[in-house]
Length: 368
Image (cartoon, rainbow, N blue to C red; front, side):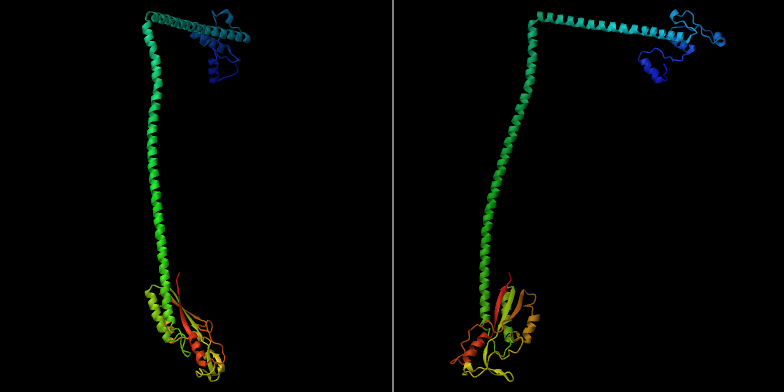
């Protein structure tokens, strides 16, 4: 071969090669290989090896005798390899024969055992019948095990199902009871809410009636004199008393003060001013129908110093939940209608109606 290396040599030997020779073989190398295979014998002496380096092959087989020709040497090597492979094939053949013989012996033993079993069965028929019953019994017992386990599991499942049903029934009963309680509580709550709303409505109505009574009483003193301020000291006394009572009642909201002017029957002029005429003067002879101070820009909002201080500083109307609001209506919305200005109507009758219309009225506006 032309390949070298330990790995290649190992692979070649594993495939059955008895030796490895290179293609360019030397006689000495060929001899070493043949010597290792036991095909030649080294008859060299120590002296000869030191004096002569030639190899002598005596008593070698004729078919592997060395020649000086290189081709002859290669032929000898091939024959030696074939001879070695034949020598190794003999043990393999022997091993195959031994294995066949072993199989035959095993088969003979099996046949003998079968004959012995047949003889034993023929001599003891009862024993065989007894032993023949055991396998079906064992199989039957093995088949009963899953059945018993299934029955036990079914019983446990049935017990668990019954327990779950009982718990479910208990939960349904508890839920139904809670629903009934909730319905009863809801009904009771609805009734209580209705009662509270009714009581609240009644309280509101009663409070409204009470407030209306207070304002009615105050408004009975609503008219004021033609020369008096709309919000005079006399008006202040009434307002203070009213707000004090409202606070005691728990009122919160706005107290509205509405001022109105009366249209009087007057005589005079713009230079000297206007005054009330004699009572028996016919209304047709009035110089002016109006107010003697109507030239003032804020006639309906005139107030005294004490009233102004009360509005500005009193704790009754500052941060107390009660506020004061003043509204001027001038000549609009008379409380009493004036008669026709014609013959037969005196200044006294006319001015009596004008004095009733010259007033300050109170209105309460609760919060909410």
